[in-house]
Length: 150
Image (tube, rainbow, N blue to C red; front, side):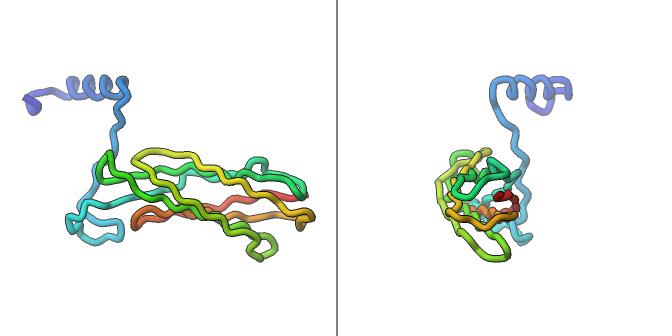
């Protein structure tokens, strides 16, 4: 029956599914995340950081900066839950000022994450660089943001 459906019918079905809230996800290839052939373990996970940003981008000593990130998580199975580890390293003047960690169990989808960073009083004036790394399963993603202390 499905083979007999024409292209127009497939498009109509796809539009109806999207309108009802279904999400189409790309097909998994037969290769592992490291390029190796799939051994059938079915535990492939892919995490990707879409963007990172500090809120606010300019702050005074003793202030608070929310280190925000948005990431997507792909899993082999829709109901699969994986442990997502997030790390935010705050640098200024080439020195590590903070190393913030958090972990949360997540399923397939897109998620926002925000971690507060409280500047000491006094804090060095200048640019701060934040390296955000998210790891899930055998996959990791990394992005960098900056904020300024005045």
